[in-house]
Image 1: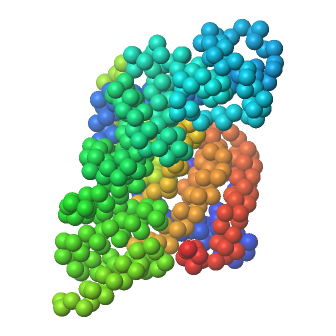
Image 2: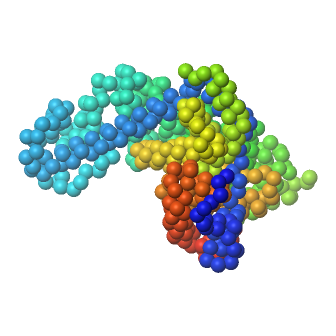
Image 3: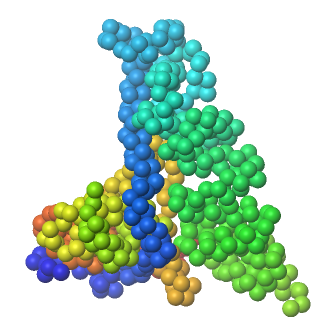
Length: 325
Length: 186
């Protein structure tokens, strides 16, 4: 290591425990060592590197491409929406050369509703009926985009098809999260699945499908899907594993306990840890593991004294104490 | 196509350094499930291995690649969140099983606070603070990693620390006033 020639500040973890930075000294002194990846994981990565045909690498590159195209599409659609708005506001910008796919919906829309279009259009809210002739800026944008996309759908390998896949997923997520229309989201995901079954965003689409199925109360289908997903390697893995554990617990607590065990040893966000701890205790009661259940119920009360399951936990503990050992 | 001798050397580099790099990756990402990032780091190492001339220590070179890969991944992830309205990734590092539950909890909360504040900073400031404050790297080595002068690192570090202090006070006023993080759990 080279000797520093510039005077370095004292690290917070090594600073004096009194003074202005004392809270930072305490905080940084307590940050734990992250540890290394487990040997099995290191070996798996090594094998993938050796094979030199890592699927995750190609998928990553495809995703990068999608991101770039999505940004491009987003930019162009906003530009189109802005241009459309300027036309309705009475501008003479029609004389500027525009793509044919854009001029068609402008003609169909006419300028009758121009006065109410003075406010800026919502840039990402897709119309539920893109075919509607109303000259909404979003409808214009969707029509323009659908015209652009249509010829490229058959080939998922092409970058435009990747962009179309990303757009379909975005529409499904907007339906699900902003419009709370899980059925609509599923319909979009079904359409997208038919076109991009092996697309680069297939995994993200499956996760969105799980969310939609859960929103509709179709728990068995959601569980079946979760059983097939590689949860360790996708975003929201911890949360999805918890959902899988809770769904498994309804039929097979023995199986669910494996998930719960893995979850409570991880540094999950507090709301997830709370559910995992409670779920594990409930399953331990189910499989008559009395001592572990008692331990977890007490641990729950210590960790989450104001938690949402406190009343139930106290009830179960009282029951355990009343039962003969 | 990579030569067999080079491949063998790479194998040795992986065997000897992958655990350390995986630790850096976890530190820099704040996540335990970071095998994809580790793989990407070694893909870059594979591509650039022939160009490594030994000007810096191998470990410094590997750390520099790790920092760049993590920063690039985090920027892409931000973009992805923006596009697909995804929920921001949670801080998620494994606990140390050897410690008592109380110690685990205290460390977990401290780590979560530090990463929550770091999350608010620019990627470069974040990487700089992690390298200096958490990894304990000397200024001279950080200068090599970021490709700048030591003076530049000292100035950037001073500013990054100021920004961290400000954010910390805004986000965690009770902790910043000196209350123990264990006492402020809501």
